[in-house]
Length: 263
Image (cartoon, rainbow, N blue to C red; front, top):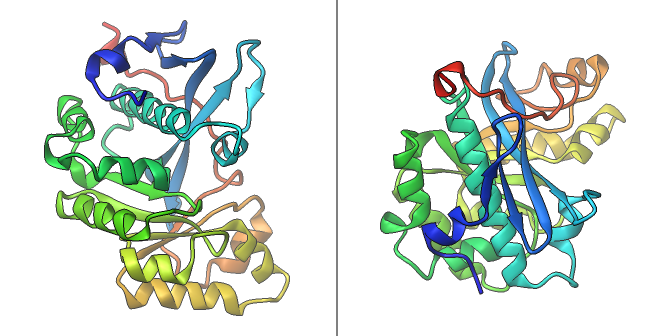
């Protein structure tokens, strides 16, 4: 069964000791962390929400292994992804950074499921409005996994854009985050995989330059992921890249609750 109603979602939610929303699902515990995204002046312009998954023994499970596993059912992947999005949005909306841009990871298979309903009246749109966020500050970040139904995926991504949401291609350059996906979806933002940064620092500069040119050709903003050192930053600062993300700037961590929500 795929979670669809607000009551189903609410039954999985609770607040932890830090007043952060967490979710429980089939023996798993889901929590939120956020990694800032910076502009070229090193000011925070947005945050990427990342899920942390723990098993029944509170041992961490790597999200990429969970979502990429053939041992996990599609329904469970979709439910965990949807619950993650719920807690991310609630925690973001209760923080002092709620006026920034929020990047939310989206599984291709979960996007395809959304195509079955009316986006305008769906839970995501209602939740954005209930939390007093705007469509334009939400970036749906399509992760690099493949899809069985590219036409359906493309259609739903374009529908979200028509409703004012922003679309990003995550980890461009690896797996299914290809030139073809970029051309089909024409995202607002392209996030370059860290492998391109490392290649560039090793003197293999053409792939990253090509990716930047591709983004500019469709009017997309750009983010370079995985910046971990001053040397890496210096190696790319002369390039036409709009935003930076990585451990050099900030580690992912929970967002503190704004005092206005506590008092």
